Length: 237
Image 1: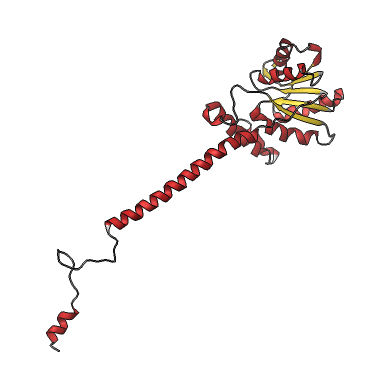
Image 2 (image 1 turned 45 degrees about the vertical axis):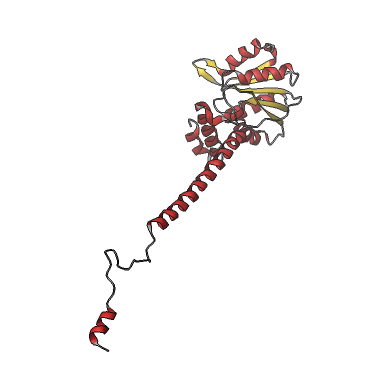
């Protein structure tokens, strides 16, 4: 064989201008665009699933905080302070329905010598509850103190059963705090959520108040599983 022909046959074709061989090892722009489109489609599906699951979970958070049990006859109705009067209104309604003959209003000092229990007492009387039927607990500043002081009052008066009233968003924490305190004497407690004009457990994320209170309450519920010395950090959440 002619050495010149052998040399020519071993030469690799040059890349470049029109007429040269194309490199098929690299994907064309169209193929790359197809791949990108598929990746974006998968990403969109994943995001839709995440958003969809998120919307399903949002109502569950509000519903988790709500504890609202069927009410029957008890020794006393316990109303906790902390709102603008809806809790007391619900407590008074229960009283007029014959749920109990006595009402405990619980809430400590809110301004100088004035306790929340004093304001609740006046509200209860204004709603038709006889003054002689209302017992004031005017020391508690936290839900934990509500439970402790109310237990002492129930022991003093010989009450063995109670309906505990608070706001819908507060009820889960109330139950988690009260149950251990009353566990030893086996008092029967029923938890009844007061109707709320400012909180809907199924649509709480639509208002600023709803978002703040759900985040705060969930944080405080979690804090109940922490050592007692760490719980104070969550009081102002």
